[in-house]
Length: 417
Image 1 (cartoon, helix red, strand yellow):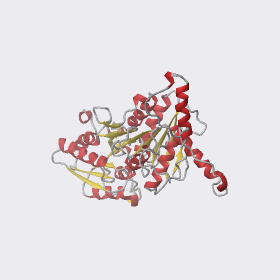
Image 2 (cartoon, one colour; image 1 turned 90 degrees about the vertical axis):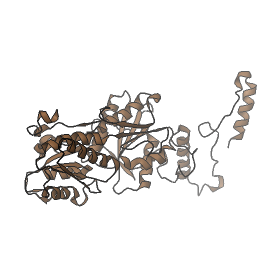
Image 3 (cartoon, helix red, strand yellow; image 1 turned 180 degrees about the vertical axis):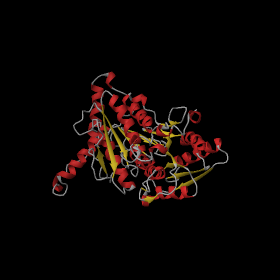
Image 4 (tube, helix red, strand yellow; image 1 turned 30 degrees about the vertical axis):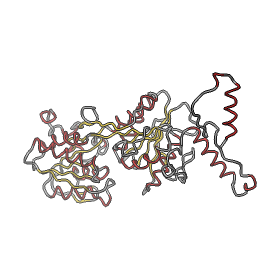
């Protein structure tokens, strides 16, 4: 604790003239060169250069505001191995984003650095792909912006997520967590990294700690589900429809509840079944298996709202093949509805995949808009970033329904009207 510096500064304020003396309290920390650590002296065989290098890095982080320990010590877990100003790949690996400048150690300090944290594949998860696309689109329009995407390792733990997000925060002006799974890590890390902005999509800022550097975006999924349900209720002939859902969390439940309300609004005699599979990754082929059971019970419309589980369910249900996704197909193919993104474009590859003609719509959650808005808030200056939670619904152009594409002979203009 550099008491000599403090005393010298007080004397200097007197000797420099009346205007140099400033009443009030001055706080000295690492940034003001007011605290430091002493040399190892006779213990340097134990306190190696590698150790002092780590301490030097930590001092730089403290001085730059990238980490802070002004809150209680348990909040700022200094035991995390990625606390330093470099990002390790032990917890998350960088993903390539075509046509986008990736943030590196040599990126100029004036460039705004954004790291998007994901826990799934962009190629198989439309939700993640949309978020990355939105961040990329806004970052590309920025005058000075780079974008990195880091994917969590398989079977990661909460501690792994904390370290990965902490490492990302060390190197970024903004860290964006895609999905509610990053609530805990952003809550822990944002309290320490007060100089970094944090955004989380599909979770509230309050659930992610509610610090004044955290912005959350949630959606009115019930409205998107409702719009898709209005179409589905008019297409179904058997009057039986089924939702193949993922984990029973609030966003998924809102989708299912809204869909049921939309169907019943136009078809009071229709019956809507809902199965929460408890999985987003199609473990054990649970999506197609659930769709198979529902179709055997007479369902002729399948709404998949469970990540990869839902996507595989609708690929199975819409297929004209005798075997699809590893399961036997009997009877007529069902009409299907995607979720989050336009799955006729993503899952069915713009009509190239068998069954694309059975996709009547998708319940859209404009994750790309949410991600773009977060990036824009960073690029537009300090006052543009607003902490707290933003909710996007139909009124905010945050939810919608997708075109009927190859199924428009069934989804008539009267229905879309």
